[in-house]
Length: 94
Image (cartoon, rainbow, N blue to C red; front, side, top):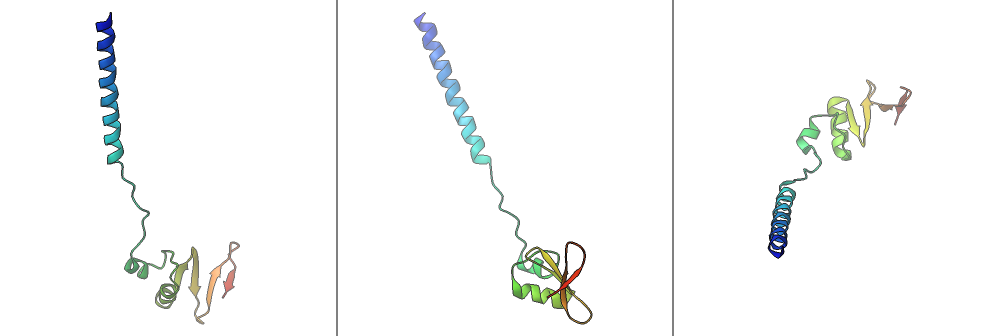
């Protein structure tokens, strides 16, 4: 009877060791990718990417006549006035 308990104990110990090794290996393989942040050059040539950089925003307004700044798209009209569209679709001049 003691031999059976001893064997059972070692089998359980082996399974516990094997299970902990397996989980540790899975945890090491998991990688967290950082949030995608476009490069400055990509932001410079794409006015639809939101930026917090005021100088880049002004550059894109001059070049493309539109630019996203802090999530809001600004436009330049033919009279060089800057505006954005409200939720109702009205032009709000700055």
